[in-house]
Image (tube, rainbow, N blue to C red):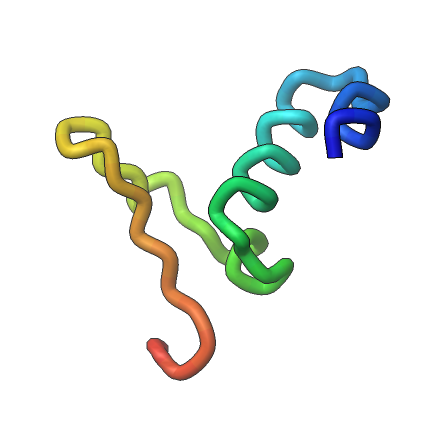
Length: 53
């Protein structure tokens, strides 16, 4: 995984891939992730996945 992330030059793309990997997100979950899902105060990320529409 380090080699894959190291090959990504764009820091925004690297951050996105790091988030997907670290949180174990599916592509659909990552694609629909809204900025409002981030709770900076508590350090949480709310992910809505399969069956949680």
